[in-house]
Length: 193
Image (cartoon, rainbow, N blue to C red):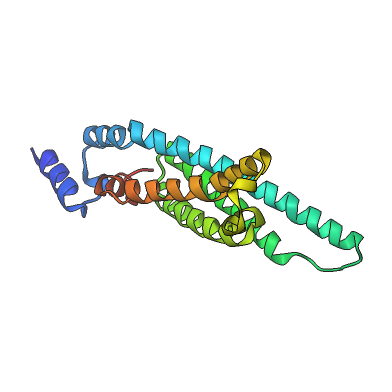
């Protein structure tokens, strides 16, 4: 009976240590904590997929920055396009954080929720900067949509989807899902190992 009391004290107050529990209850508790729900798996896989898209977008921007730098050197202008490189590295870092968050969520690590929230914040920041720094997206207001070719319209849609729509929508989903009390308790420090 005293083992059950200690367990109830542990569960309700969160003050008691796991060492105070009998081994049988500790084993049961560990198996419950390691259980991953379908929602956790879905968010983890979505983190990995969106992170892969963001990494590809960052690599594309890095390639563009290197090409721009090469062309400037060819013309005799020795100027590094710093803003382009910074945007590319920000987008790459965002994707890497998302990839790590997805992998940690699959492994049920306590830092997965915080990393996913950081990933969501970085997605918003990179989307806002992309809107102003990527020429195709920044020139949206200047288009006469009747005179855009099909290839130009397809390019505009792909750039807007990859750099603005997907990151912002997914970031909002992450903020809504991970702010729920259940997710907070599931990934609380010390609840998983």
